[in-house]
Length: 427
Image (cartoon, rainbow, N blue to C red):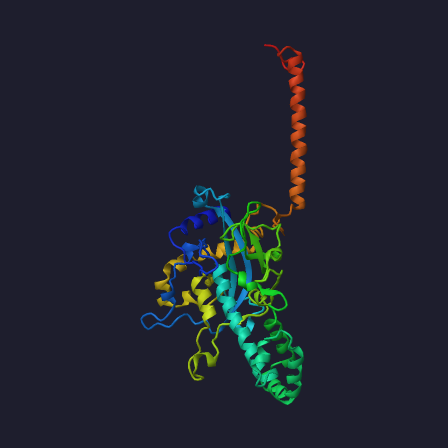
């Protein structure tokens, strides 16, 4: 059932692709078809904003929470015609929720559940987390360690730990006052920001540089080119960087480690820093969808949605009414504008349920029957499956032996069966 559903939805995506992901300079094809749920998400960006004086969907009381990432493989006529080496196209999805802000960690009622392309999700959330990190370090620099010393903050010489410690000691009173008033842990933030500043000097590169498909090895006479891109890991609970053999990062090579192919401009081997990437799938650290007052520039202005929440919400397939989310279905205006979305909501919900329940393995293959247990590159056979397989093998062997015995009896009698010996009667 789920295989037919996925195939039908994939065919629909040929005519519309609301999941079209952002392109990047590193990969002109990064916006490849990720629209498996195309019919379920006809909502245009303009329908979610201020149309005819109507207010946008209010997300300010909710927080964004990562649930799962998943690869989904399905047949592609286009790839078959192009002799691409495989007829299976890999779509990459992220499931997330919008949870009531006061109940984000448990998130068991009055929430909305959504599915969006992994690339769209990562581009939006990484940008937000990067800005959040930059703001943290700016505040840390101003309040804690670097009074009047911009060079120390930049870490120009890569060896300024001692200078920073001296600055921190000289400004101890200011640090304590700021910590008490603003809940800033100066020791913690200065250590974190120093690591970020000195990342390159310590031969590390940020893993978020590879959230779009990026070439890491050129083609040679002896080996093909290789690419780095995001992949699902730990049964979809994490996102990591893997090695792919195609420039759209659809064909994952699990036998290779991406760090074996990473070097800096001088040819030195480098490792990945996953600190920023981890924030994109940390389900314990929800992103509040209410914009801060200083972002709007007016403390008395009405609360507004954060851009990161609007971006992923607009692009996502929506399953809201099943979970009590007061979103599009609760507004008659939006019910008219997005009637196709509401009509197909059940289809979206079913597809999300199928992904969450384990219809697909970690690398996107459909799991056939039995308990669905993720393993690297495939699934694990259950006890019931082993018993059934053994039963059928023994049964087949037994039938083969019985057939051989009958054949022997027939051939001994010159091709005539001894009916009287078998209890038959002559007419």
